[in-house]
Image (cartoon, rainbow, N blue to C red; front, top):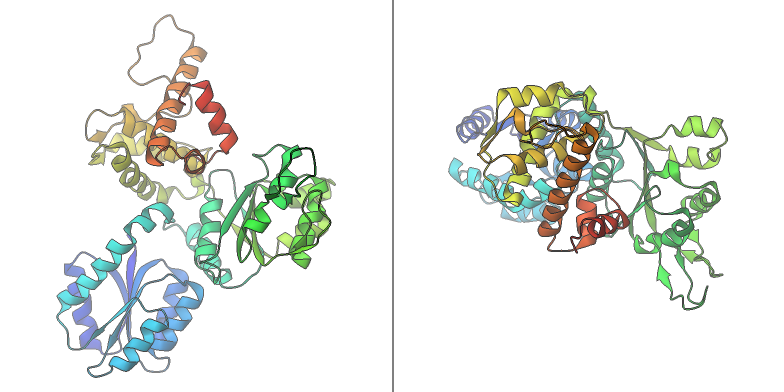
Length: 437
């Protein structure tokens, strides 16, 4: 469970806050000095902060500014002394979520905390990074530190480890958070179309061709996320290098040099250094991308996070699918924790969605846990080819999940493709294959 960060130098008042937060069911860490709170913030994950304005050494306003520099969307409730309204209003202008005056009824503070949670529920469900393992804590700490800068970030990790989720977090915690977040997956687009998708295309380049803005232009004043950068062809690598170094580019078929203000985040599941050594990747581009690497551990190396991820995905998808799932049996949890998870978090997410769809009760049992192309749930073994059964299960599962994604996005195929972590073209082909149009 995420914790609340309390900073209050008055020990008796701090103990009162702790007692009431504990009664309300919240976890927390409390400190008497801002410097200690900053150290805790850098090593742990907190949901929100409750800071006293008057603190020894660094005061509440300085603490607020320090925290928001690394996490611009971190909600903070400021506690002020009676009659200090002017300063309290200043803290709100500087980014505090709200303030509360001493003396106050503890229930008032609890109500404000719950209001923060209610306001941010949708955002947390859609964007939350789940996990309390050391590897994930370290990755979060690094992303918070690099987010306020314009440094190029290289996110490294196996497929399905959440690289785009971290890229979006960096954008959300950055000074560009109100700008666009544009995504291009080098592995999902045919090489012949990749250049025009990235740089755009000039009108009249070919007969009947209209001008089309590329992902770089779309990301102007914001962030461009180049996913699977290791799959980018050598021909385009030099052009990407120019964008990073000079912040300029030319559209396909165009002569005009276009200036762009864009921050670049890249991700790959490949060993770029090895590719450089083998002549498959430009060395100069590699060093330009590798300014600030962030490594995401595979799920098999953070198994202590599996239970939290199970509950997280159930909380999201049970509502979407229209089922009230109250729990998971111990045998089902054991089965999930013992799996190797070659597909990482994405595989776990798919398995939980299948389980929610398959159960007719309000609980998920081990029988509902189906990995990969396992036998369709509830189907008896007869004189049926095992490969055929696996293919049948795969197709049935894909149809259910695609239907649910289209329902959730109200038929918006682009949004559904992003939800399913596949390209628009792949989704379009699946819809035609299964006659879902």
